[in-house]
Image 1: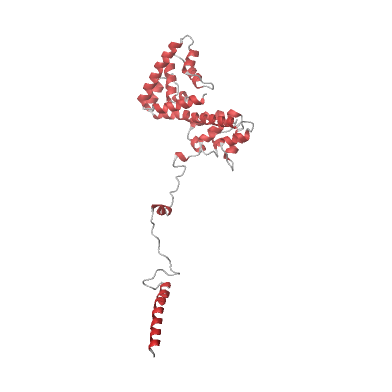
Image 2 (image 1 turned 30 degrees about the vertical axis):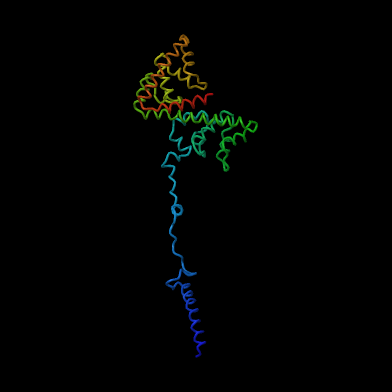
Length: 294
């Protein structure tokens, strides 16, 4: 064998050895090579909290039976007899609150729809079909479809009014429950009522504790029958306490009425403070009531 041939064979062996190592690596048998074409790559370690979150399953939403915040309109109203009773006169003849509220997202939407139906003389069934059908619309869009002659500005105003009225209905219905849940407040309120008068019945129709207690004190201090005073300040066309007292006690002068109301308001404030009720919360509800009555 010549020297040139030996050198040629030696060079060829150096070329083949790396190649064979590559082939072995592709079969997954190499010790130094990476994974071959047919091998399963190792799992990638997460590098950020974002990638980790992507692999975690989202928590299952709580059932509507375990949280009151997820209850639909019918379920909430079934547990709120005060509100159901207040809404019954707004329903079409023969309808029940349970059946009428079925399909609505929440009780606020349902109560606002009732007021829109009442205020604009829109058949409730037609309005409900627009709001809860297969392609549900907003309250404003539904009103525009059913009352196309109304200007958009008028529709917006009417919807806003109905929502304020719904807020008032819901706030009012909570009143009796809040009073009953506060023994001190319940005792003070009951003591001011005529004998045999139910606290729940007496409180129905008032927007908040402040208005209810004020009516009780005015009635008690001026010897005005509570039922008459209540009819004036919570009726279909409610008036201020000053107007109510003036109508029920016409012999009293304006300055006397003003002075008597000041005393009654101070007594009411004392009651609220003594029972731990939030004065700020009372002001918000009172402001909402005044806005809705405009």
